[in-house]
Image (cartoon, rainbow, N blue to C red; front, side, top):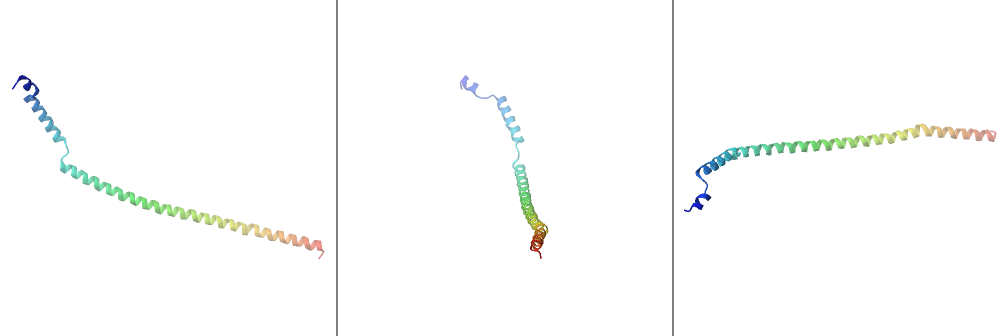
Length: 111
């Protein structure tokens, strides 16, 4: 063994520090059972959230349908209000005009 071989190899103190560092790193890592438990919890939580989102989507769809039906009913009612205004306002006015024209015609004819 030459002097250059000895210089390239780590000392016992350096090896001890590296082993201590590796031991500390390994103890800080999440153990497999903890990881599996956390993963199961996350999966269960995501499933609950997906169910909540699905329920909210159904509620939104139902509320949207109800709103559309309400708007359609209001539009139909507005149309019937226009018809009521025509029948209540224009038709009597038209009959009044016809009766005035008939009276003028009868007066002009001298009957």
